[in-house]
Length: 328
Image (cartoon, rainbow, N blue to C red; front, side, top):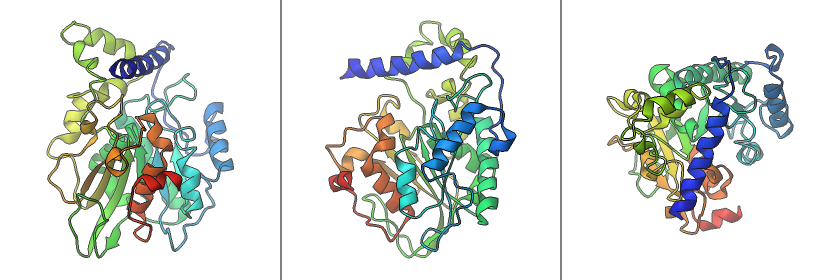
């Protein structure tokens, strides 16, 4: 099992290294509309998501789901392939769903999330503002996967993003096992799967770089095509700055979902927030269903994870999460 996980991590590193070998890389903001973009790959991605029911800019939120839902993909993914399973399901539940492709570097098609996360957070800010304008709303729900669990925290903490995330009023907290009752409070709502809040060791592989004297040389190679990659490592400057003074912001309710089988976020507990905050809900998929075999990528197509996030955003939904949700 450990060997297969190491192979998976090595395979991911190989893909990123291949991306890094593409020359002439510079930061480039995501287009705010297909008309403003000359990037054919992004236009195709947008058309695919629209045909599947989301990124519909004429969608108007309903009374049942009065705020649009913004989905934030992970490293090397894009606005379509990360969400081809969950986005249509949220649409079917009545949400207005939007997803962006962020962090693209010039000459690298399809693969996104490669720019440094400070730049990607600015792109998320611009996208959220566009969604608010299109839907005539003032706040959104936010849901991320992998990098989408980490970069939005920079947006919330340093770019005033918390003010743009939906304020949720409820007489009681959700029925999570570690939640304490909370009366008549307003919360921002941010959920994530494959969470990575304190960096990863990549099964210990990353920790070998410094002792072997390879850290700087390997980082230089990756930085040519992936400025965010080394930001994910434990104790990176980005991780330290983001978590300095606390890893949460006031008034936000968090749901961080991790898997014991995650081979990218290691140890999986680094996906959890650590502030002593009753509004933080750290959850392990296998605590809901011990038979759940989703690792890092598969969480994006996990019906149990979907139903848990839907319940988090929708207090009228069934709040009991277990193996039966795999059939829903």
